Length: 227
Image 1 (cartoon, rainbow, N blue to C red):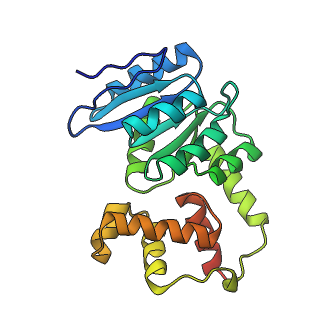
Image 2: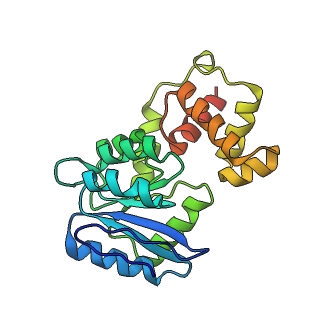
């Protein structure tokens, strides 16, 4: 039987065919509230709840959740640093920032660290559920306030020069499908590749484009196409 507690963080076996989600949130009341909310979503289960980034680094590689909900303001290690380290340990795990602050600098620090989406804690329950499903389909959910900041930021940035990115034909095919919102499994099916091979291509693409997340890769690709 699945077992999840709030302090100390505990892990548990996920129920078959359910989407596994983990929390990293230091405020007890919020942590318990998010856990209950996640368990109320059809097809979802909360497999781990951590009170700090340090605990997340130890616990999450063990349970390997499909999605992590990450607070930014954590004691000692920030949620941004934790995101960066988890992306190295669990590159296929999707990380959704869930915070009360829509600060421009924090948004981009989180995206550069590898976050796959950025929502405010004021997001309604149905909005969070939609965001989780969007993540699994290859999307990058953001609240409208955050999305406006992203658009404004990239409009102000200098264009990427075509010579700065030297992708192979296959890498570009993978990136094109990624920009259309395809998940790794769907890209693999379209190109008749294994999911592991697609993941390997994405790692190379991220390195060549000097990005750390799907979101950054797609945004940079779309900017490159406008040249």
